Length: 602
Image (cartoon, rainbow, N blue to C red):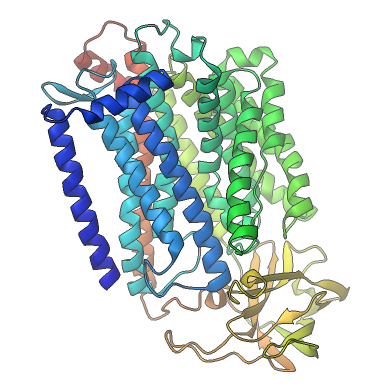
């Protein structure tokens, strides 16, 4: 609690400093903020109220990305934190999320003149760019998730999973802010006197400026990929069928928007930038800092599909291009991506999963592809479809994604089935215990011949011990009979379990876990031979969660976070529609643009 109070005091001090700087700038008592912005504006060929905020945003989002990946690896390798600031990765997350909010507020505060036709009026002589307002809102939404996360843990216990509601606030706010920065950059380009009528993207620009734009779309791909990170580390706590859908939706958004906005080759270039950023962070977190290794989707397959479609006349009809591109991404593109998944990931996609995967991924990719196409239309100044079509598309997309998530969350846990596990001690270093495991599932037909996964997972063994993570895909030796292929750790802080996921069946059997007085939880001994029942997997993976808290309270908290997330999506939709309406009502005063903007929706 002391760390939370200290963080709150620090936040209050920083907020007061920000308020003073903002007030002094607006009242012309300081000029250094304008000077810095103008110097950067000359370099980046954008107004000062875009150049400085985008620079702050870019450094902040990369900082947050590094902290986020490191934090996930930290929990996988080491376990829970003793406090909100006891984990060094949290500092990078807080600084990064605050930087996103700061960047948005800079864009709001800096302009003295009206920053484009879509600008929002704050006072009689103060207008703010839509992208800046949205960026600040996304940053604030993400920032609020940090203290709420500590409160959530105090109520429900620590849920060591990426998809905890408050965790989704932080990663969702940061991810959605990528849409805001692209809108802000577009508004800035529109405001330049030498920008042609077709918009900033029709202007011949320096290579450095185009480099930054490609980087932005690479960032958008990464921002839409953050929900997959547990799969990237090999410790997904949800069904494998989620992964193809998440990849297809992220790929459709990033590659289709890039192709329609930046032209030929942009989808592939954006994917390459995303690969470079993720690879850099992965190398820093894994080999350099000694944390668990993480892989990541390449998106090159979907990008190639989108680029090939871009060679056809479809590209002149953006909405249709988005739908067909999404279909291509969710089928051929997903198959191409599966080759990479099968080569490096712990859990390749079995043939038996493809039917369910396509049923979830194809609708998600088609609809997100249409939304990406409309976003590309906003960023190129092309008129969006009417209000009913635009809003209906966004609403249907949200509903379809929600339905897919609900289907993915549906699982079956065997009620009376068991696993007999025989452990044989292997030569081990002093103080350690390594074993081989022989597993007999009772009844043998509980699992099909090709389950989504059947593994032994050992995690949270401390990063100094093999990075704190061990995953062994078991070898089938007979009906329901499996054996390990590598030495399995059953000592110290390691938590070891048998994991089974086969269609809707998702369950586990504990093998070893140390006593934990803080929870409290007794030791689960690693016996030479034991027969234990299959249980709900999260009762082992998230043994810190408090089972005495009413389920309705957890559900209510999740619903509140969902409502806030939908508000962010609605805000981004409104902002894109407002910018597009202003672009397509030339010469209209600000009030008229505001009046027309609800008739357009992204």
